Amino acid sequence: MELLLAMTGKDPEPWLTSLRQALPDARVRVWAEGDSALANYALVWKPAPAVLRGQGGLSAIFNMGAGVDGILDLDANHPGAIPQDVPIYRIEDAGMAAQMVEYACYATLRYFRRFDDYELQRRECLWKPLEPRVASDFVVGILGLGSLGAAVAAKLASFGLAVRGHSRTPKSVEGVHCFCGEASFDAFLEGVQVLINLLPNTPETRGVLGAKTFAKLGEDAYIVNLARGVHLVEDELMHAIRTGRISGAMLDVFSVEPLPSMHPFWTDPRITITPHISAQTLLDESIKQVARKIAAIESGLTPTGKVDLVRGY
Ligand code: NAP
Ligand code: GLV
Image (cartoon, rainbow, N blue to C red; front, side, top):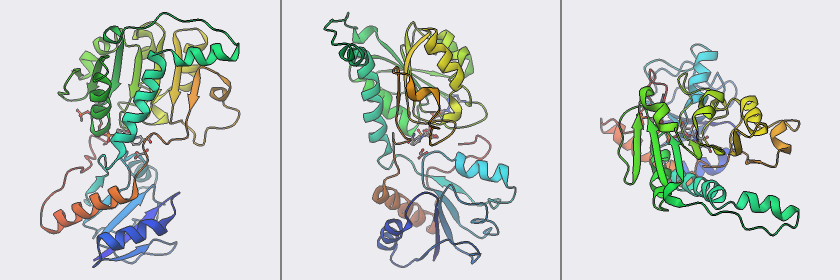
């Protein structure tokens, strides 16, 4: 079995070692410019346009992350870059949900317990207890109840917060008020004090964190974007923060990454920035998942995590 590995921005060596351990009978190679030899499976992250061109005989392509926009956008911008009829599988959780839970809980509890206000007070040597917030009255909304959003919602609910989630199709998560579909979007947003985004990047979800959404949230709402930069309309957030409609934000993803040094987000004390690290692809867990999926495909089964190209995720 021939395996092709092409992961932009990652050192391939540890991935090669782990793959060879997980699939000792496979021949694994790292793609290099000019390589057009046929393979059975490809493991890719943001591949260059030439990597998969002409690889119509692949049994599967594995996208080595949760979001598949890097590979679907490639096909949109370079027609023929992704072979037709080859199924694409994404990484499902594989240790990412736990990381998202940590990040989202930190962001939410920091705002809920007013630690962000105390940080600002500290800069002025100001000793001033603020009015505490009541967990059961504090509304947290999560956009997306998939592998990551559902785990985040369940954990936040365990703190006694009033947690809501919104998805495309009906979902059930213990302790979480679940909304679905466009028709219920406004009801979902009403009164939300922390809005956490864990949606995939699709034509329907781009720009969802913009003025129209902000206007429907509770007073002083706080935004946490953990999904993709294109979900956030950055100048509308800046305006909403400057005018007091939104009280602040914790952002992990941006329309341009790395975030340019002159971007106004860097200098606003109400915005916390992290460099797209809220949930990183973990090597061993992800390789084990891919190895399990290859074994399933080789036995004629269809594993979970198959990307629906029409839906876009
Ligand atoms: P997932 O399992 O596919 O879940 C996506 C969720 O979004 C599902 O609940 C889906 O609804 C919902 N959804 C999709 N389109 C919608 C729409 N138009 N309206 C309402 N809900 C919609 O994805 P995941 O594994 O949780 O990952 C989510 C995203 O997180 C990824 O696509 C990626 O962009 C991002 N991510 C970021 C990082 C980071 O480090 N910043 C790391 C990993 C992932 P249904 O359940 O009804 O299908
Ligand atoms: C990271 O952003 C991912 O989609 O896995």
